[in-house]
Amino acid sequence: MKLLSFITDGHASFGAVTDNGVVDLGTRIAGCTTLRQLLEAGRVAEAAKHAASAAPDHALDEITFAPVIPDPGKIICVGLNYRDHVAETGRTVTEKPALFVRFPCSQVGHLQPIVKPKVSDDFDYEGELALVIGKAGRHISASRARDHIAGYSCYNEGSIRDWQRHTSQFLSGKTFAESGSFGPWLVTADEIPDPSKLNLQTRLNGTVVQDTTTDLLITAIPELIAYISTICPLVPGDVIVTGTPGGVGAKRKPPLWMRPGDTVEVEISGIGILRNKVVAEPA
Image 1 (cartoon, rainbow, N blue to C red):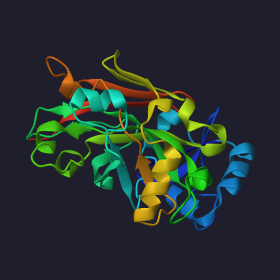
Image 2 (image 1 turned 90 degrees about the vertical axis):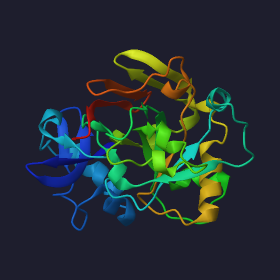
Image 3 (image 1 turned 180 degrees about the vertical axis):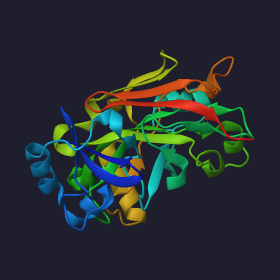
Image 4 (image 1 turned 135 degrees about the horizontal axis):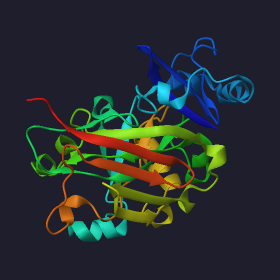
């Protein structure tokens, strides 16, 4: 099943994507007005029944896509999690995952513009696989980690490289307002039994700039969940962004930055294509 968050006629809701359109689940599942609330309530099976039986309420081209989880409690990102990206940065593989956070205001949905900040021209793409937690847990073992995953999505972890280099901490370049994107939808975990078997490709204006398979992650998804859940409880709606492969714009010669008017796409097999235009921040 594909679940998404959206806005129509000024009203925010969530729903299921079917072959014929979007079934509005926010109007059908009492007490759940957001996808995060659906996950918290453990009512995904109920959503699936509505998706299978109800007529669509909206065509896909009638809605505005919101980030898959517009209101996550946590967005935890993993840095340097593909060996080719570690190599191109000149760093060494760390024993433990490199973690940082993004804030909800830093992300937009599919087909919504991502914003190049006016304070920088060093606006870089990072195509990544994101997962959403569906079952709460602390000290989750790697062997049980997949039981806690609601599903998977695409993420463009837009990075402001010169601000990222201000200090040894990544955050300042990683969470500019509306600089990243998350979507187009969540594909539930039952449809992706092995997330290490996916192809990930990033394209800038139609040119492939990143191309990998997720089996090349240094720290695999089960181990990421085990590590992160040791630090803090994971709860439904939390997002883990698993890392970007080599090919980022900052390490090309000359550097390849996203510019206003560009189109950037992140495509992951079994999930779909996350597509966004780049716009300039208003002066």
